[in-house]
Every structure is written in C-alpha cells, then in structure tokens.
Image (cartoon, rainbow, N blue to C red):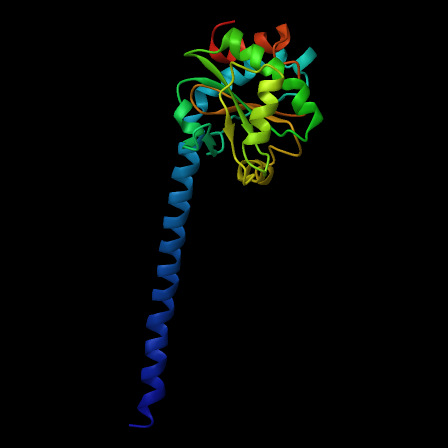
Amino acid sequence: MDEGTPTTTSRRRRILIPTAIAAAVIAAAAVYGIAGRDGNAVAATCTASQAIAAAAGPLATGDVAALMVSEKPEPAPALTFTDADGKRRSLSEWAGRTVLVNLWATWCAPCRHEMPALDRLQADLGGEAFEVVAINIDTGGAEKPMKFLKEVGVTHLGFYADHSTAVFRDLKKAGKAFGLPTTLLVDAEGCLIGHMAGPAEWDSADAKALIGVVTGSP
C-alpha cells in the first residue's frame, strides 16, 4: 500500500494541473470578453461625437484657442454636485443638451473675471439645446459664492456647488483638471468634446461659433 501511494498522488497531480490551467484560461477569456464588450460599448457610445469633435477642432481658436478638443470623445465623467436648494444633482440630468461645465471658486481671480461672460453666454444661448453649468468648489459653503455672484450681477446662471471639491479631484485624476478655472464642453450625447484649463471670453464670437457647431446650430 505504501508503494502505491506515490503513484496515486502523481496521477492526481497529472489530472489537477491540466484542469487548473484550463480553468485559468477560461477565466482569462471571460475577463477579456467582458472588458472587450465594455470597451466596445464606450467606443460605440461616442462614435457620432467624433464627427462633432472633428468639426469643432478648427474652431478652437482666438478666444477659445486653449480648448483641448478630443480626438476620440469618451463619455464625460459622472459628476455629482448640489443645486441652490442643496439637492443632489448629476451631470447626466442634462442628457440631450450640450453643456459647458465650469469649475470655479471665489478665491480664483481668473474665475471671478470670466463669470460675467459665462452669465452672458447663458443669457444668449441658454435653452433646450445648451446650458452653462457653473460648479462652485469653495469649501466654506454657499454664502460667499452666492454673495459674489449677486455683487457682479450674475442672474442667468443656476447655482451649483461641490464644497467637498470631489468633482475637481475626479477630473484631476482623469487628467482633465489642473487648476481653476476648468471647463468641459459636453455634447448632447454626454460625450466630452473638449476641456480647457484657464479662463476664456466665453461670450465671444469665437466661443459661440464653437458651441454652435457642437449644438448643431451655428
């Protein structure tokens, strides 16, 4: 019986090793298949947006020359924030509408300078096809930024905020934010057409022409 034990063990090993290898191959194939499907789904989601980005690229000039237009648009980050009533909001709520997302703070001088231009842009183009969503990231609460907006005469922008600054950190991790102000141009399909670090004259003819191409109403 003692002499037969090694032989039995060897046979078991010969059976178990190929079985383990086969299981690993099947698992790897399953993971690859899932990843492949997800990757294809992401690509398919923004396929139509590639033509929009291609048309927008040449218009990223003049006052909006700093906009980095995406060669292959991807779904915009799933940003969440609050409105003036403290209700949680998500960027996905603006699906079907082109959105200019702007992150700003009262301690950011360039942000303060461009806020009236963003307000005028919203007054001129805001509607069913387009909206400016300016998200304040002051960490001290809503009182100071709301007071600032009132002082500079901003009346057309809705008030949105993320006092935890999570939206900025998420964009920074994604390589879309390096400082303030940070601006994203998202099309009606929820795909990121471009992003900008720094301020711009958002109510300029250059900006409106660029946005018009994205909204489909130049």
